[in-house]
Image: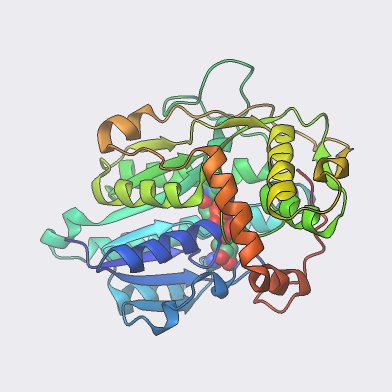
Length: 353
Ligand code: NAD
């Protein structure tokens, strides 16, 4: 039986949702291992510091010695590995950090986990899990038809997706070669509360509130499949507890939307919830497309639904409404990100959809 889960990247967007759920809905001890890069924010874990079941370790996953000390100190029964450099635009401007954290860091974490796992007594060894959280972007781009399944060939197009594809391959190899009990998940685009405002949905909400231009790449016709972050966190918990060892599971929300539809949807919600006198969609501004911009992602989530009974609870409409409402109600959280008084660097909101 699992008693302790080590979550890497638990101060990031999805990792913090996982930590919040694990603390609120289970009796597990939760160790949050995070380097605290610009993308991290411990304010996304309100109250966690006072919880006796929670521990925080500020560690870089590239530091093998520090990782070994954390495994020895906390003796986790599972690792949920979310720590990564995650922003595609940043990977185009500077791929080095992505190679370092996503590839070298995952290798160091696998080795530290393997050392810990191989020394466990037999009863705990069989139950140990290394869960790698990855993206549907490893599959590349789809045309107008079809869906990514677990057997779709990898074909990454950006430095970010190539680094995640590489880490997926290593995780699988550590299972085949060393027997490490791994599970993998590949998820579509997440959105929801506590999302760092360089990403499309929070960027558009905050720029819309500020009356600033809403940048949209190309013609805005790139299609993404959106999943509410709390639904993703629930799926991850099911996979780490009940997923079959050595298997991968695709996770998606059945919510395909063009970027323009997403931006228009946010504008309509802002018109209703934060009226500005003039419609927000007047702010939409088309900008030069991102190089290597994948046309369409869409997930076939049949396997996780069939095997583990997972279903998203939110539709895109209900999730987007909750998200806009959250940003309106949590101004101090995002103002601290914007003015640089949180744990990361000052953000210029320079990014585009
Ligand atoms: P995020 O950028 O919000 O958070 C990443 C976290 O990892 C941050 O807290 C950061 O400090 C930490 N981190 C980065 N480098 C580190 C290092 N070297 N050592 C220790 N910690 C480090 O990312 P996110 O959006 O929460 O994504 C989490 C994971 O889920 C990533 O692996 C990402 O590839 C994957 N994923 C994300 C999405 C999405 O839509 N956001 C979709 C599918 C998969």
